[in-house]
Length: 325
Ligand code: AMP
Image (cartoon, rainbow, N blue to C red):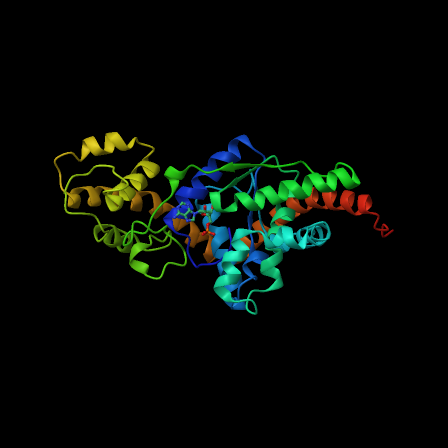
C-alpha cells in the first residue's frame, strides 16, 4: 500500500489487511509500504515520512506480524530501484504506454504534469514482485494488468538471459470484499474521498466512527435486507458487518428482521468500534515510540535485503554487468 493518508480506511482493512493477515500463516509473505511509488504524485516531504510510519504501524496493529512476515519500507531496500532499471531496459515503450492506470492518470493530470516516474510505475512494481521469487500476488482487479506485465517481463528475461525469476500468479480478491462510501454507497470507499463523512478511518476515535455509521445513507424501506441494486447503502453496511464478525449475511438479516435501521446501525457501530478500538490503540502505541517502530522496520528491511540482493546479483551477472570485487 502507498503511504498516502494519515489513516487507512475500513476498505483497506477488509479488502486488503484481513486477507493479508490470513496469508501470512500459509505463505512466506512480504508486505511493503511503497513510498517510492507514492513519489509519482507530488508529496509534502515531512508528511510523506510521517504517513510512511503511520501506514506501517497500522499494518502491525491490524495483525501483520513483523516476526512472521517481512514488513518493510520500499525505499529501505535498494534492490527495488536497481532491478527496476534493468527491467525498464526490456520493457517496450508502447507496452508501458498501454497500461490503463497510466492512461487514466496521465489524462487526469495532463501530459506535462504526468511524470516519467508515473509512466514507469508498473516497472518498479514488477521489480517489487520479482525480487522475492514471488509465487502469488494478492491484488485488486485494477492491478491485474500490472501483474500481467510483471509476468511478461519475467518470462522475457528468463528466456533471453536464463532463469532468474519465478513467474508470479495474480490472486484476485473477491468482489464481495469491496466496501463503499457511507454517504455515496455506489462509490468505492477511498482514502482520497472528497467528503470525510462517508469514510471510516481506522484511527478515528470510536465515538466519531459510531456517529458516521448512525448517519450512513440507507433507504426508505426500513428492512435490513441485502440487495446491492435496490439497497446499496444497507447492503454495504451488511457486508461490513459480515466481514468483521465472520458471520453470514443471512444470519445478520435474521437477527435484525422486524427491527429498524437505528438498531441495526447501533449493532454495526458496536462491531466496528469493537474491532477497530484495539487496532487503533495498538497503532497509537507504536506511533508513540517511533524509535522502536523504526528499529522493527530496519530489521525487516535487512530480511528483505537478504532475499532481494540474491536475485539482483544473479540478474546483474546474467545481463553481463562486471562484478565489483
Ligand atoms: P488504496 O488505498 O486504493 O491504495 O488500496 C490499498 C489496498 O486496499 C488495495 O489492496 C485495495 O484493493 C484495498 N482497498 C482500498 N479501498 C478499498 C475498498 N473500498 N474496498 C475494498 N478494498 C479496498
